[in-house]
Length: 344
Image (cartoon, rainbow, N blue to C red; front, side, top):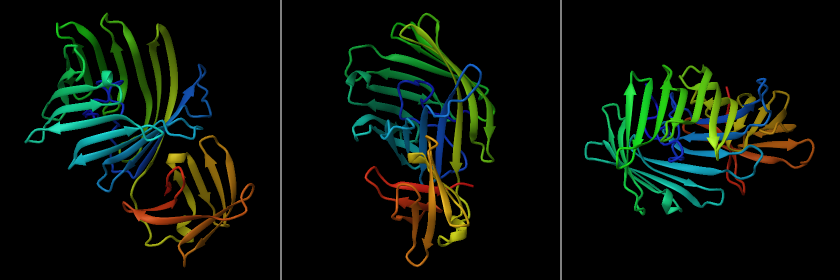
């Protein structure tokens, strides 16, 4: 079935705060995209990163986008719900400035009837009246710019055998302004995406292939070829996307040295710590920078200390807590809390 029941694919440049649906109620997801050259060689530095966190009901609670190597996040989006229904998503920039707010409105039966997109630039705001089918897929949209004098646009979304969706947008006169065609695989993930303009010319085309899946049904790797036109210039990109997904599991009632051994990842800051039985550890970042040293665990005070072998001579305490059925290592900091979850 098609997982993206909202508008992430219908208006890919319009509703940037929308995010994909994950199966199996994960705790956290890190998604990295690496560019490939013409020979298929992968750039060692990711071109972008997405980080997803989930609440104890398995709903996406917030997500971040970031350029690896940069200190600040590009944006941070917080999602709120009414039961299982998305209610409001607020996207902020690196300085906390609101970039976009997306609100969902429902009728008395729980059917989605309206989506309101607002932001600091009024010309980009959208007030969308929507109609959904029995599977909660949006099949009709009447889009109006609240502060503009332009007539509304109508978009019709036609689904075929759960794997093909064709969207057509027309202006008030019925003239076609663009089409979006999406073909999904049996898991509901994109195989290709084609966007055309009012003349029928292709302006954006992407093909996705070589999917790998985990036991929950979420993809963990895929490759893609993208072709698009920007300012009259055609551009092509090949990419390799990788996900690391952490699910709830069996956890001890307290943190022990034996349980600590293994790999822990802080997706928000691209950090991974590998703890070994001999009391040493290695640290990695998105930029492949490595550091390491010694670790000790004070089970009486519930404090884990790690000591760097190169630039640090004092211990850095990492506390831990239970959250959504998992043990979380954490350290508060000026840029926000550093959370580490255990990788399998």
